[in-house]
Length: 599
Image (cartoon, rainbow, N blue to C red):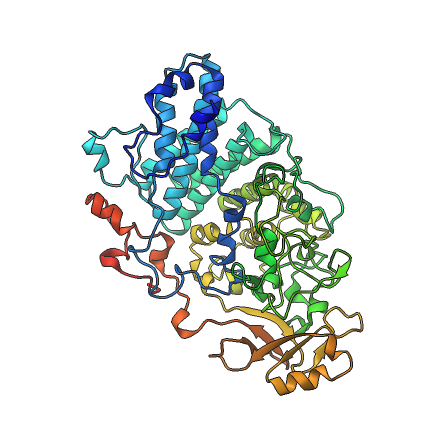
């Protein structure tokens, strides 16, 4: 039976390709064990641990990558190099659904596996709609002679997403598994969690993009809130709590997932040699994109008393040590802050190599150093967790205008309480944070929606949500934010970054300054980083700060200018797909091989 399962890992992308020989068909559909064996192939649709966090290195607004994603680089992306129009997963799932109808097993068993298959069909189509918008809806395994279906045009978003919702409803009602201690399998609660995610995306996308379709944005938002609330009331999951200084990061650095909160994760194993590259990605200056958080995002973290950091007098020119004091405890669990150690040694950001902007991520990598130069990580990476459910519920209700103080306390208040925040936990905000509004969402005037978005950005950072969030909020222009880093009070002199009395780093402008600064007391032990005041320089740059001093910066060269225009809320249909099927039309703005130009 294992050979049958192995035979399902296909590489072709044609809708009419057979996934398995007829020889194995009877073995699959004549027993529960056969259905189970085939169903393992569905999980090939789940990203690997290394792929899961790859998008968070370059297609988000809150980090600065070393290399620019071509989708944002002006003139670098069009239908000729677009990708993703791949249908292998759908063919595999549809073939199973079609044949499982006649399986000679008990009805409840049949429906259990049909529920799983329809979950993965919804998973596939959700990804396609997010990427391309309208796509062909195919609900059976096509034969080579079904010319009309093979050459059909795209179906509307309305048709596809209503079918996705029907699949998810079936999955919710029929998947039998309610608990999986390995956190690696789809359960009934994962189906509800995914339904809340899908409905929130679709409801807000329709609202903020002005899509007047048959099923309203309000209906989708109500669906999201209902699915999330069902998990909250019935699943038994809860927030993983404990010490506010460690509880949040515990969710991401353990090989065995925290099953009180995590519903499904990507699991790795030393024994099975299934490893990933989180440490290598987030510590190496030459592997990956050396992504650094940018200062506006760090400024969005609240103070420990629940008030905005930007309400603090003199916040614009606080040193790295000062800005990390009395903040949301998640800050020190997401980036290297003063006091962070690795294997018993002080571990400030690697200014000399990795930390161009001074804000080095740690959320997904472990403190041990063994995986810093190769793929050796085994920490589980969450796919679905209860924290997201709370955020989905809060946002859906806030968008509907029905979020109560009790709802706030049970969702945003609970998440902030875990992070050691003491104020604003029991009632909705009544005042807009003007700095946050003007920096991120100037068109949003509801203080509750603004605070829910702030919380979502902090709580879910680096987990693969941000690009989709920006697209559904019609806030893609944030992807062109300036890459500004930490405040540096002086250059060409040693700086004590953690206030322990020992110099740590020298930001220098010329080699002569570097030599002079290193000759100062303690200077020879400092990290060193070349910076430039020239905006056209390829080095880390420095921008003058109000009131004196500088901000580190990393701005792109003219040939790498970032752009995001209206058409980039969808990807272009790959040119070859339209050659194969002339009835497939291009997404608006991408016609005639147009490139991403900011329009």
